[in-house]
Image (cartoon, rainbow, N blue to C red; front, side, top):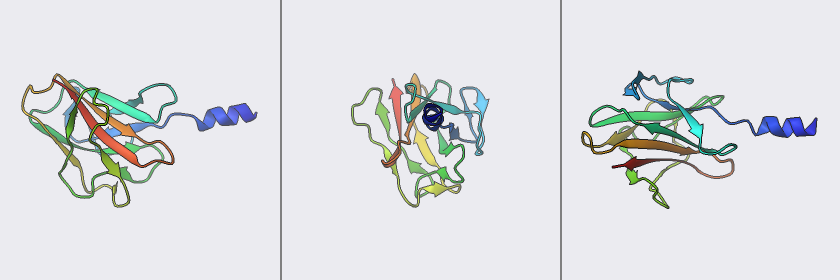
Length: 140
């Protein structure tokens, strides 16, 4: 019985990219659940990723939503730019989710030129006991 309880606690969260734009050929929304679900990097991991192979030309805006949480992760100010790190960067530039980074009014802006990237990967770390982070990697 104790083992079952431990297994239930380790259930992966449902993490979503929230955007009203078309990503990977699917129109999204700013509600949880959305059409763009991130997957754990490895089983039991608290780092989630979504590979984006089809995106709006020039950029897109987004927030992050986690099932069971009433507030979405967002930047402190609207249109906050999110740096695109080269794929595989050891210590990527990320946005720390601190107080003031929850709500539904602001969105990160990801900008690029048409055909600059083969794909982008949105990453979110929601490990308990650490500062949550959001970052993007791109493959040119």
